[in-house]
Length: 399
Length: 133
Ligand code: SF4
Ligand code: SF4
Image 1: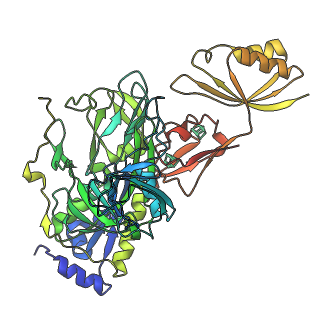
Image 2 (image 1 turned 180 degrees about the vertical axis):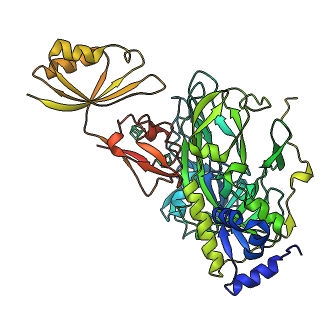
Image 3 (image 1 turned 90 degrees about the vertical axis):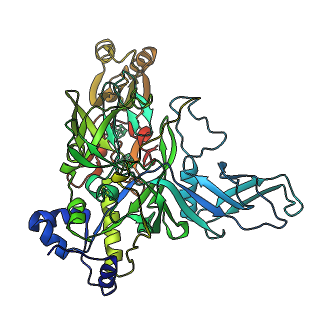
């Protein structure tokens, strides 16, 4: 009889300290040794992890009211603007926001040493952050200006709300042109000088649940070192199954998640301000997602190895910036991790942008949390659209 | 007799000239090339140990050739707390001083092979590579 388990049954076992939890790396070994059926009977939960730059991240803040009160119309945190087109002392600070006096790319390639992601890192480290706000003054909010310092502990709420994190899969970026280019995929040397990739492959959450059978709205996760939740699908959520030139199904591709969690519980080891030379500033975010082994099929996908997971190779000198379709072929994460890949008949050195060792550490921490009984699985209150939804990307036309 | 360590930075315009040859031939200097490399922008970095009576003249010659000469009194260090072992620097380090250890995928730093080209300082996304004077 084929195995069926419910979230409730797994949570009962977690509470009793009896759940068998393995990281996505460990479960690969288990499945190799025993096969999917036997391993599925044994294992309750597989933990995944990823630690990489995720630009669509930011934090909602409520500063508390000053006396007299101000309806903040513009606000800066360490000179980085935050969005205040919401209630009086609420603001949203985005990871890629830059100080107004940043030289940007005027001295190309710009350094982008400091931005919203760095402010978030300072906040989460408990460091004081300079707050400046201006307004026009109203009868109920007479004040027009305030300058003070805040810390994460002083303010009311601070919750991370990341509209697009955890890309299911990502391009392996190369440069076919004859000059160095500076991209969000790092510095790419001319004439296929190097290749950068940015997922944790066999540890990556959405590559291990390609049909969104377990990850949905309400899934409880590791976020930035604290506990967070899947709030919605991410922006640009185009779940599909990647196929190679011959039409063979490779793996999941294009799914994304919107994540939420209390910044006050998080820590700076898992939320780091990040700079890409010539491109901009962002935030590196640590995310870990547990996958319950509800049946064999779920384990079959969760146990996929780097040899069985592929990234499309994309030219960032022309194809990507000009939105030209197509790619330069596919490469497995096993090859990417070896350090040399073959593109158009040439050996190209490859390096990751997301940290595999930190992804492994996250999967390990999440495993411990679950084993200790501190962390119960969140059963999705609603599923997210999967590959069968056929969602396609809309493009922006100039009318 | 002086015996000094210096870092030379060549631009794309002078990297292919026989400058070191002239340093030895014309100024009777004894030169020990400790480290050398050329990056894809065709800029070169060389760490030299130079001894000889005409050291000062040799340095003036280098400067005339628009080679920048820096005393070897800075080092590149890794902030271990900050480094995430992402690996992004490893394809930019010309000497594999920064390299990925496999299969752990941990990034290791062998400062013995570092030629102070500063590529890692520029490319590390979390600013974990620091210059120390
Ligand atoms: S790029 Fe920076 S963080 Fe990444 S491995 Fe190199 S030194 Fe460490
Ligand atoms: S400065 Fe950095 S990139 Fe250059 S050789 Fe040293 S470690 Fe490698």
